[in-house]
Image 1 (cartoon, one colour):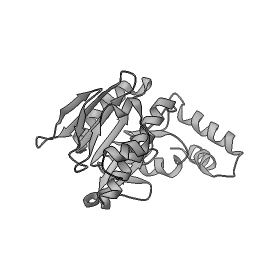
Image 2: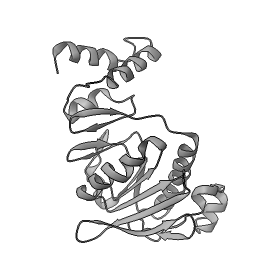
Image 3: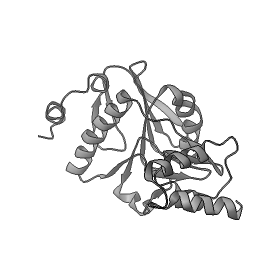
Image 4: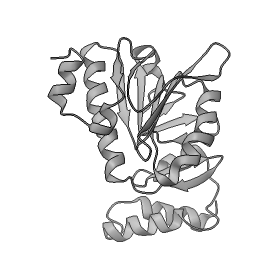
Length: 225
């Protein structure tokens, strides 16, 4: 990265240096450039705080905004699973834009679960290593990435459990990492129940993902209230 590029990034990262809306637009435009600059993960973290981006093999990848349906499913799962985790003192649930750093990438999964035994991996702005559980809700532009690149990255990095939820088709897939270091499909469909391995005793009614019932009804069904 040249000194001029470094100075530009410092300006774009400094709140108050420019009118806030213009600063964010310029930052996004810089990220979307045809040939974004290569940078280390540490340089990426230093200025990417306000942008929805990921870091892949030194390059910055700009992510499209989430749809309303996508966000409603993520929010539902975050509230329900987080309450279950807290109730049973199992660990911590985090949502994007919190980073998960893997050997050659810095991803922003929709949701990640970090168990107590792996809390040492949590840094100020990212998780240094694989989460125990990663949840991705597919968007039209993310289908190939979630099913392809991320699937293999998460598998190779040692993510123990991967939920892949597709609201476009009302279909969910649940993978668990076996002793051979490969993901195996444990359950799929748009109805039925899935028992998580990493969140002990958590049973997800898959139909909830499409109906999004109220929290009181959901917590009651899970025996939380």
